[in-house]
Length: 393
Ligand SMILES: NC(=O)c1ccc[n+]([C@@H]2O[C@H](COP(=O)([O-])OP(=O)(O)OC[C@H]3O[C@@H](n4cnc5c(N)ncnc54)[C@H](O)[C@@H]3O)[C@@H](O)[C@H]2O)c1
Ligand SMILES: [Zn+2]
Ligand SMILES: [Zn+2]
Image 1 (spheres, helix red, strand yellow):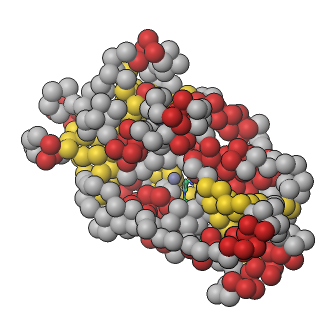
Image 2 (cartoon, rainbow, N blue to C red; image 1 turned 180 degrees about the vertical axis):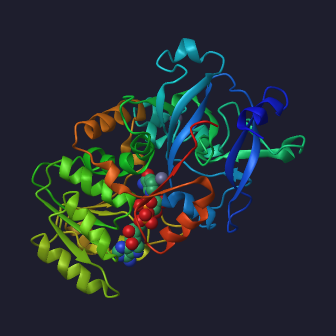
């Protein structure tokens, strides 16, 4: 049966889609055919072109972050606007059928204190955190299961491991149509998170000494951000030699292969940064490397925490030298992004050859290879796996 015929047979104007569904944390995702409602008020339907696999999806898949299921994971995607819900044409004239959009995983509510203060990346009332559309409903349903029992949530209200999806119109950010869809997808999470951590949250000065611990899509984007900000020293740290090589190609000036002994890593970091970095970014989310980042700081240095731990995890540090030396610990969420402003900027930098995000893509896969991509990520193998969706469906 063709995709078109599937769509025609879906009830009440719904569209059949294919998506990776997590029933509950800790079990493998499964590819399912689901019914998608027509886009509601303030929503658009997007035909997905590409979605990266980020470690935040893996945190949910493995139960490190408790989330209600069933849910379609994926939050690093890009696609083409296909249909506008009510009111979108008037309020978002930038969105038309065919517009290439990168999807933001944090839709600001526009009304909370953080949003009003101009810090939408700290929004406390975002519909993204409910994994539902802004009006509170789920747009996806299991065929033949009536009522709420058949509802399927969408991660961060965008659920990009799906060939089509409804998203809040404010989460669909147009980027230059010349941007490769895979790169637009990565701008949706890792690029914005890492480049923004360095250039916006840490607001690096030219000539800074920087360390990045953990070189996945997020950490390597921190390296790219540090290079864009003209850091003089960029030390890249990982357990996997291939990651160090890639970091050098992206602008790292020195690398450290981390082993089991953190004291050796710490000494190497201090040696390479003339006593310690101005900014040490942690891009993994392990207490051990968070503590390493804090321990590496010289007087006045900043530990920039970008990696996310499982819920409930604590890290510790020696308080006296921290206070005495005016050190700082700063959390960076979504690279302090204002997506409508920052996504097009990052796309423009890519098109100008200055933000080589395509180098982060180490594997191109189909939706049904998602579990293999998760397994590779657990092993630290490769950087970004990017799912491509069949254009015709
Ligand atoms: N702050 C944010 O807004 C934000 C946004 C997206 C992702 N994240 C988080 O960032 C983290 C990284 O995401 P990712 O997709 O790049 O993950 P990833 O799994 O691709 O990368 C992690 C890297 O850390 C390395 N590593 C693991 N243990 C190490 C150790 N002990 N010493 C040195 N290196 C080690 C791995 O080899 C790998 O290269 C995750 O926790 C993710 O949830 C945060
Ligand atoms: Zn992510
Ligand atoms: Zn808000």
